[in-house]
Image (cartoon, rainbow, N blue to C red; front, side, top):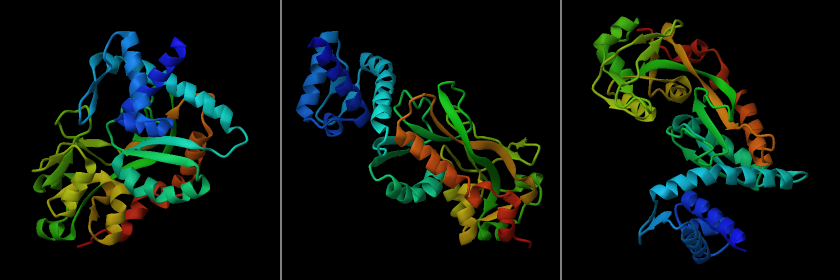
Length: 317
C-alpha cells in the first residue's frame, strides 16, 4: 500500500508543479484538491524533505523539489505515453496535447489552423505555450515544439517545416523620410532596430544578409529580446527591422511595412517541428504532427521563393 501511495504522491506532485496549483492538478486527475495536497504531503513525509513551499498566494519548488521534479517528470511522461499508445489502438485520439512554439510563428501560422484541427480531432485538448525560451522539451513536459533551428538532442525527432528567410523592412513614412537603402552599407545611415536571442545576454544578433550569409553589425536606439517587439517598433515608424519573412509578409500585404534590400535576403535558419524520439508515441501526437506538417508545407508563404513573395511590395522610388 505504501508503494501505491508513493506513486499517487509522485503523480500529484508532478501534476501540481505543471499546473501551478493543487486545484489545477485536481482538475486533470479528476479528484479533489484536498486529496492531491494530502498525497503530496504524505510523499514529503516519506521522503523526509519539503518539496513545495506553500503560501496563501502560490506554490513554489524547493531546491529538493526541483531536483525531484526533474528526475520524475520524464519517466512519468514515458509511462503516460505508453499507456496512451495502448489505449489509442483502434480509437480516436484523445487527451491533453502540450505544444510549445516560438511566439510569432505560433500566432501567425499555427493558431489559424487549430479550429480545423479541433474539428478533425475534437477529443484532443491543445495546451499551447507561445515562448522562445524552452530548452528541454521533455523535462518541461511538452509533446511537440516548433523552433527555429534543429535541437542537438538525440532524444528528439526534428521534422523540417520550411526554410526561414529574413528580410529588412520599414514603414512607408520612415523610408520616405530617411531614404530607401540600396545596399547593406547604406544601413549605417538608418536606425536599425535589433534583438537578441536567449543565451546571448544583451548582445544583439548581427544582421545576416545575402546568399553568402555575411554578418553586418548595425546600430540603433532600440534593442529587445522579442522579435515581435522589434517588428512592432518598426511598424510604429521607429526604424528598420530585420525579421523572418513569414512574420512580416502579412504586414507587407496590409501596407504597414515595406521590404527593402531584396537582393540581400538571407536564410540563416530553418523551422523545425520537434517531438520525442519514442517507438510508442500517443496517437494525439502523431495526428498533430502529420496534420500540421501537411498544411505548413502547402502554405505558399512558407515555401515559395522569397523574392517572388516580396516583389509586389517593393518601392522603386
